Structures are given as C-alpha cells and as structure tokens.
Image (cartoon, rainbow, N blue to C red; front, top):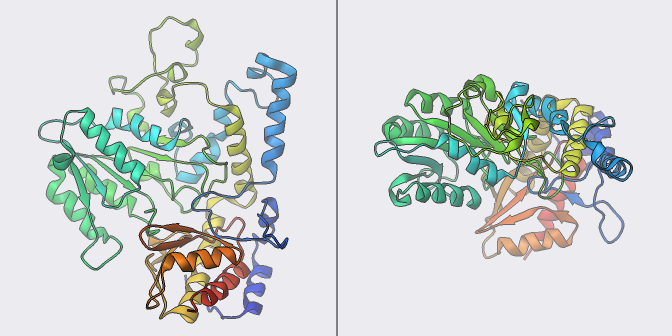
Length: 428
C-alpha cells in the first residue's frame, strides 16, 4: 500500500476526518491524563482498552445470576450452558477458521500445554520442538517443561532459531531451511504469528507447509496476531493455534483465551488429550456414565464450564469489532495508521530512532518496536519521559520501546502527537 503522507498536524486531522472507522473510537473508554485530556494510548499490544458495551454485557449476566440463580444456565437471551458458542462466529472470522475449529477456553499458556499433550508426541528419532530464540518467556518455559516431562533434555530437544548475525528479525528462507535440514528430528514447530519483541509477522502458511512436508506438527501462538492481522488458519492447514483475548481483542486483563484445532484432528478419538467433562459429547454429557466420548470439534479439548463474566467481556469486544466492519476493515486502517507513524518517525527522528519491525506490510501488524540510537541517551529514560508526557506504550528489556496504534481506537493525530513528544524526549 502506498500513500502520500504529510508531516503536519493538519494532515493528521484530515486523515482522521476521512477515516470511515473514526467513530469506533467513541465505543471505547480512553484513559485520561491528570489534566483531563485523553492519553495517547499506544499499548493495545499489551492490554487493549475497554469497550463501552462491556459494562452492559457484564451487568446483564450479574442480573441474570441475581434473578435466576442456577436457572441462568438455561434461561435468558444468552444462557450460560452454551455461552461459549456465542463467541464462535467472531473467533472464526478473526482467524480464518470453521466454526467447529475455534473455542474460548482456559488461558493462553494453559492452552499451549493442552495442545502439546496432543501434538507433541516425541520419539527417540523425532523429539525436537522448534521455537524462536527470544520467544516470549511463558512459551519458552512451557516448551522446556514439556520436553522435560517426556524425559528428554532441552539442550538436545529445544531447537532455537535466531536471526542472522547483525539482524533483528527473521528471514523466512532461513526458517524454512532449518525445517528442511532438521525436519526429520522435529516433532513440533511452535512459532508466533507475530513476534512479541520485534512485531514481525511470520509467514504461517509457508512454515506450515514446510513443516508438514517433513512430517512435523505445526502450531502457532497468536497472542500478538489475533485481532491484529488477517489469517486463514483452516486453509493454511495449521494443526493448532492459541491466543489471548486481552490485547487487540480488548476483553480485560487475564480474560479467557482462544484455541483453534484443525478439523482434520476432530474425529481422531485416539489422539491423546487431557480430558474434562465440557469436552464430552453434549448429547450425553449429563448421563454421567464416566465413559468419555469427545465432541467431534475443538470443543473436545475443553475441560470445565467457563467463567461467564469473562466470556461476556469477550462477546462485547467481538460485537464492537463486528460494528467496525471486522478484521479486514481494521487491517486496512491499521496499515495506514502504522504506515503514517513510521513515516513520521523516519521524517523527524531517522537519525535517532531505529525501527526493528519490518517495513514490508506482510511482515508487520500495528506494533512498531523502537530502539534509541541517540549517543549517550538511555532508552529507558526516554520511555519514562514520554510516559510522563501522556503517552502509554511499553518497555521491553533490554532496549525496546513498543508502540502500537490500534485501529479500533487510535487516531492519526495520536501518531502525530506521539512523534512530537518522542522528539522532545530525546533532547539531552
């Protein structure tokens, strides 16, 4: 996508006036500075803002509990027994899946563990898990502990891939080369859809095909991808994927996570899994005969009935996304918004700031990861200055400031003012 940007406040305001999604910002609560003005909130990659309808959806369920007690499982507009099904269509559209392939359950790392129970089945010949060096720590810990649980040595079985010397991001051809050369010993490929530190989007389709060609199972952590980029998990034949719902999906801190399992695995009753009663065939679940009969969908991986209040918050977010026109409309704006931010950074601070995130549109979402190159100035000091000036981003050690203009509630004017604040904060 090419666009003739201009470095001026008037241009930023003009872009906001022409933005067909600008009104969606009004559907979110924007945190305030001490002076009463809106924060420049660029931290949706860590915790998304609250949709205004969330309170209404939560209040409804609290009211149902007050009035109906246990009967709330079967009564009202959104009975609790099938409540997770009210999220299915929204999830499927976000990740490019069939309705039978997506479900809300557990937390992200718990889901990764449950997926590895089924899809990491190491043998003496094929026992490695391929992940990226500098993976998100929880993913690293989960992989390492799974390897140990199966009696293997992480030093031998955890295959860490790194960018080339002197580079910050991965080249797809390098990932594919590792898979081709070592695939016969790789049991599972577990990579991010979007790398949390650099904001790089991985080529999930190419990686999945390469993995399957070598007999590997392939899964993805979509924590920074869901609600951020467009995906087609079903068509790409991804085996499984997991994501959280509190970043770009704005469902509240620690909200219930999401999970995808490709339909090719649904009827395989011999596939190992940790089972619970919510994964049992719905038609016979309450016969209580203790003979586990898994549902022929991703729901077979569910364990327990989920927390309704968290699901209600997710439903509020999905409904707000639907109001905005869905992920395609949001992605279209996102490319403009992040493209404009990159343009301003290069114009104003090209000699002082390095952008780690790839420029190629296929390789980035909304997030830009920045390092401070100004001689003698500590990046953490710069981060603290911009925060004091009304910007909420986040800092990741050792030296990255992450900022994410989220298309649901950020504006072009936010981008313009942020760069001016960052410029001032770089003064010695």
